[in-house]
Image 1 (cartoon, chains in turn brown, green):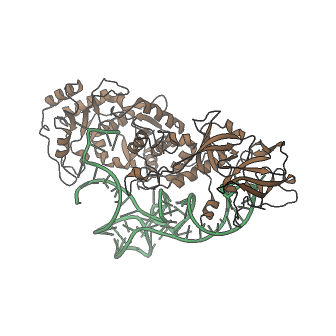
Image 2 (tube, rainbow, N blue to C red; image 1 turned 90 degrees about the vertical axis):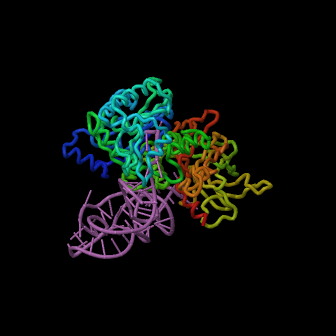
Image 3 (cartoon, rainbow, N blue to C red; image 1 turned 30 degrees about the vertical axis):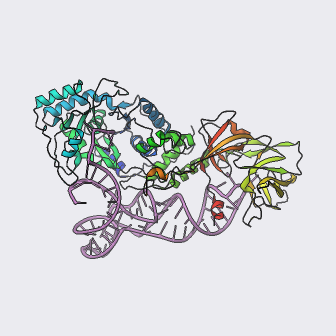
Length: 561
RNA sequence: UGGGGGAUCGUCUAAUGGUAGGACAGCGGACUCUGACUCCGCCAGUCUAGGUUCGAAUCCUAGUCCCCCAGCCA
């Protein structure tokens, strides 16, 4: 496991939903609570889903209840088996378990069909021949009531017959629907005779072509909850309007239980988008390399980028649960990731923008091994040996001509420390015709081996390095916000807010050899730079790393002033 | 303008009639073999107007602003 930071406390968190659960347990309404996470398998999970996952599974765990993973697979036109697999991988990776097997709304199709017939029998549902467009017209508007369909008063027998014939495929797609008979004048538009079943001839990922009529969300969700004995059905705010309909089905159908729906505010994150529709578009239009592109806010993207699952869980728990709709700053997530990685990530040295540094008074044929600590945040951390020699790679921006006083790095006549190695003093540089530094020259103090001078002399800065003769070459991919604007689409079309510089590929970086062994997806810290992990694209002869997140850089801030 | 929700530092939140507190961000400092980490300090908020009360973020009244709903999507 990669999760070394577990910030869970003894006491369970307090929010309006947990308070409700606690009260229902104390009053004896339930002695065992059941929640569920019900994704539609029409895309990959993103960090917004992670909030729902952490809430549903988290609450079940905290109160010794159970949480079902249930696929809401009621629309075969949009769903795919591949998504079913990816979703399970993501939920598992996030650290949650759903027992024997996942549930599927499609497992209840037969029951749902019988319940639809029950509704018809009660005079509470009817088959409508109106077209989709006509239904929309008859529905009325937000301020005007709707009008009754001419087919609203069909007899029970005729409705039963028509519905049965819908099922066996006598009618074309869209020709007829089954509707609930509720109230065409309701202020809540969901109650204006909502459609319950529609005809869709499209193979279903699980039921194949067994059906050509499918229940929609409203007719499947609450009933599925009831069948599974869900006690607390937690969903996002936009379903508040659906709750009266959810309850209407529970009241009018012979369901085995009475689940209750509670709504919480969905997660909005700055500088990205969190809607499956938009994420799908980013993938299908190749604005990103796929659902798991490390710039994507998907669970798989975050995983590929090197974000630990524990950091995601912690981030979610820090947000709390409320009904207010807000926009969380990306820096909040980044901070949480850094906090976890600072504890867990091993340190290594790597140079991303290399320039040669030559130590003039170091023997050309000499190599020595220096000891470097792997994780100073862990007092039990072990160490590793790093090869040192006359020619090193250092970071281009660790040298500056005519540097200001505050510049604690290489500049003529200034002494700095090479981390874990020696004090060196810059004696000069060579440049090409364009004025770019091609080589930095230094002298070193052999007495300072290991990084400290016996005379107690202090040095103002420490820079990282990699021995040129020993370095491994790698491609390193740096990521920035996917969107340049905090709220994509606020001022113009959301795609225009894409950040053109979200991906910065450095093809020739130099790493200390130990990094060749780095485990895919597990972040290590490149000292002074940030957290990085091996990408799945990486090969022994073509290493590829992703930057998970940079280190805080107060020098960069100071420099800009 | 029908129905349903929501408003507390820049951001996310706590306070359930009794000192408006925390975290992130920002700013300043200390420390440092990572300009990281850590530590210290500072900045900053109850949507508005009335009312009830010894006392109001919390209760009442009237406003204001924001979000969601007119799919045979979920």
